Every structure is written in C-alpha cells, then in structure tokens.
Amino acid sequence: QVQLVESGGGLVQAGGSLRLSCAASGRTFSSYAMGWFRQAPEKEREFVAAISWNGGTTYYQDSVKGRFTIARDNAKNTVYLQMNSLKPEDTAVYYCAASRVSYVSGNNRNYADWGQGTQVTVSS
Image 1: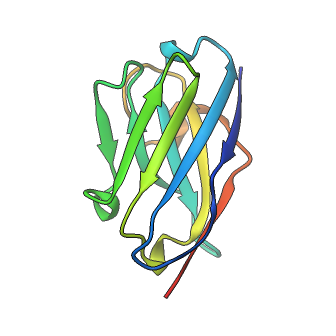
Image 2: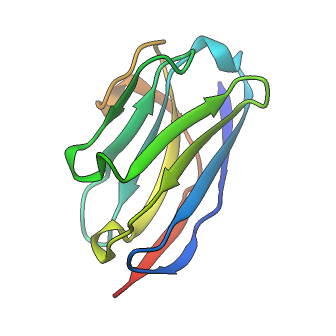
C-alpha cells in the first residue's frame, strides 16, 4: 500500500501557473507508475497525466498537452504536475495516484492508491 499526500493547489487567474506535488510513502516508489487525475463539480474523475516508474515515458490527456508537465523524483519519492497556461475549465480537485504497474496508463482501474486531493481553482 502507498500513502499519498498532495500539495500546491490554490486559486490562480487564467493564464497563470501552479505546481502540484505528491509525496509518497510505503511501497518502493521507483517500482510503479504514477498518475494525476482530476474531478470537477458534478463531473466524473478524469485522467490528466501519467509517468512511468523511471520517468522515461509520459502520457497526457489531449486537453492538457503542451500546457501540463508531469515529472518525478525517485530520490524524493515525489511526483509533480507543472500546470501552465491554466484555463477556467482546469478547475477541479486534483488527485495523485499510484499505479499497480510500472508502465503508464490512463485507466483509473490500474491505480491502487489515491491521495486526498488538492483544489485548483482558475478564475477568468
């Protein structure tokens, strides 16, 4: 089992940037892929980005490509989501998740452990 704690959310104007962090503990961090998901009010949770166990492969939802960057530091047991050119439609609770496998996936059924979430609000 993996314990995950997100931080870095907040309120930002459209066009601004935020950097989310997710600190992991428990299972060996470098053995599994990590992902970020988000859930807006009255909407289902959706995939945002994923990164393989060694950071060599990344995968993004189309709507965030070119604006968001996922990265990980295995020495610090931390995964990051750099979000640039933010839009009001990016407003959501953002969750990090630990995968059951080492490769990237956008399927939330491949993720075994979830953080508590951090709120991101983008004003127009």
